[in-house]
Length: 454
Image (cartoon, rainbow, N blue to C red; front, side, top):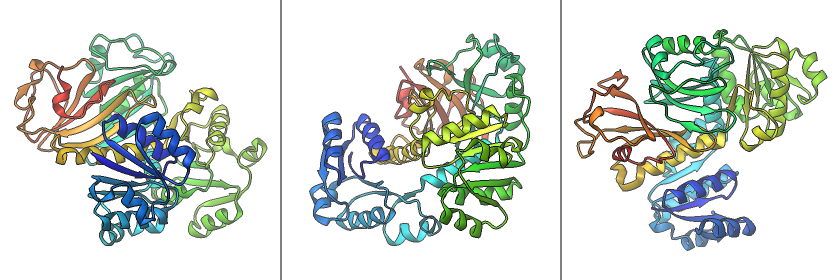
């Protein structure tokens, strides 16, 4: 497809790489000539230097024949105006990033009157991801699928846990209704799809599909003994994410303390959330953190705009014995650099919204004849993905017994949802028309349901 991306920042660059790898024809618009020329040379895409609010620049990008226009600059107003112009000029599908709370509150009005098909807010996405991890205290990441009715949950196998040395088959004999979809080595970041004979090793990460009850049984066996409800949260950084996070934490009756260095931002939060404690101060000062009793909190959440500060704060919080540490990091390469592997949960807003945008773009391909509903990456290395499809009668796998399918070894069928009933697939199960199927792949890049076959 012909895709025009406005904004060559970190998100725009990530989209250029991923969508180019998917085989789309990409045109990037940005005012930074050095950045544009660099990406054009690296990826063999089209580049235009200029503003997305300039009609002539958009015409130069052949906006009238593009299948998707994606506006992801750091300026919400530029994204909105350029998207409206692109729509008027004939772009088929419009996606914008909008971070301001007033835009999110009025998303339906904006979408309708500015003719925008999809408005995405990375701060809201980040807040949602944080809440998932808080609701599953032992999880390092949770990906919601099938309208939030199914969760893919990632957790660490702790030292001296009961399942170390057991095979996947043996684990399944203890906890029946669980699917171990992938196993990731914490040191090498290698991800595999296990079979029944695969042995569970210490300090690996498992991605599983399970009910909450069975998940709790499994993580207890994996060495997590404190799967309890959190009652307090210490937040470093009163970023926009806080505006979405605090109301939900209040609903959960989680007491919060927010540390913010900027006076006006701290005052704004205090006025907007009078029931939450907002303290003006430097959250990178260990003495200040001890003075405000960081070790007494159940969960520590690092939300500043600086990745390094977030990681250092979380490492310090972890050393003080805080039960759960949630860290906002966009440059995930820093995790290894700062030896932050022991941190509980890393939230990357840029990766989350990149996945959401890619899912939308893929759903447009061939009028979504592949019936793709969900897509997300399961590892920072981008080696593993989870996807959700609807089975069509045109699919080769339709009406076929799973054991008779010539499945690629890099693919796993994780779950079937039929008439609202969740089915953990066995070899004797069939894939039927209109089934919802959750698929995991490793280094395969599945794009259609039939691509799960060799």
